[in-house]
Image (tube, rainbow, N blue to C red; front, side, top):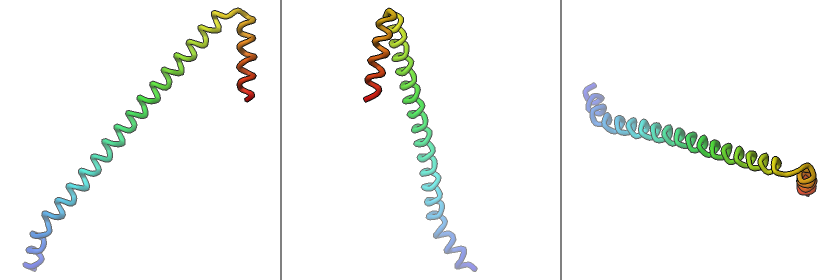
Length: 83
C-alpha cells in the first residue's frame, strides 16, 4: 500500500500539469470561437451597410430619372440578366 502512495506522489504533478494544459487549450478554443463569431458578425454588418448604401444609391438614381429613363434602365437590366 505504501508503494501506491509513493507512486501517486510521483505521478500527481504530471496529472495536474496535463489537466492544466487541457483546461488551457479549452479556454483558447473558446476564445477563438468567440473571436470568430464576432468577426463574422462584423463582416455581416458591413455587408448589410454596403447593401443598404447600394439600394439607397439606386433609389436616388431612379428618382432622378424620368419615366423613359426608368423604362430604358429596366430594359437594359433585363437584357443583362438574361446573359
